[in-house]
Amino acid sequence: MISHLKGTVIYQDLKSITLDVSGVGYKIYTNTVGLESKKGSVTEFWTYLAVRENALDLYGFRSKEELDFFELLITVSGIGPKSAMSILSIATLPNLRHAIASGDTTHLTKVSGIGKKNAEKIVVELKDKLAGLTGETSMITGDVDAIEALKALGFGEREAREALKKTTGNTTEEKVRSALKNLNK
Image 1 (cartoon, one colour):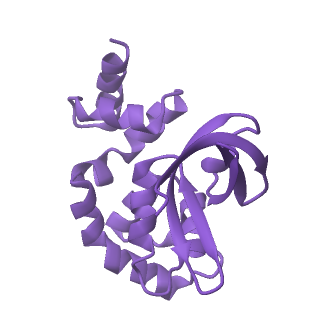
Image 2 (cartoon, helix red, strand yellow):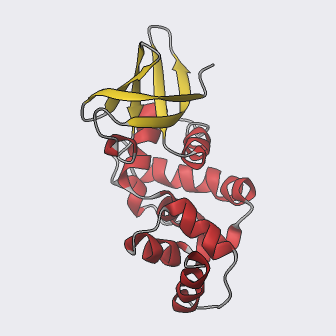
């Protein structure tokens, strides 16, 4: 199985990129985060190979966290790789986790082909798995706003998460202030 690729972006369309890895071009279906890669840039992707009767499709993600969430989504009956990729394109990972943890189906029903019943099924089936997978239940429900605030200030998601793990404070404002002190050290 192909689990990780690093190469140069040689082509890009609305749903995929082609990554040149040592002279071999891999077509990788990706979400909006993956499509931010510019033509000619060196980029890395964590990948999932979907094997079907008539195709081998490669789905790529910029972080291992996104890949893990994607693999969790496709365990839900009725949710295939394309639907899971669409879900990951509509909102950030922290927002999706928060929505599932709180039972909010609003983000999920925005995806074409996912109605209220499927959205509710995703929430029911993944709520407990998501908390167990991340081991960060408080991060899922309480720190989403702080992560978004740090991202708005120009920090990456991973960087924001690491800084928030070392914070003190109860409110979002206190957490962001503490995280900024950690990030500026």
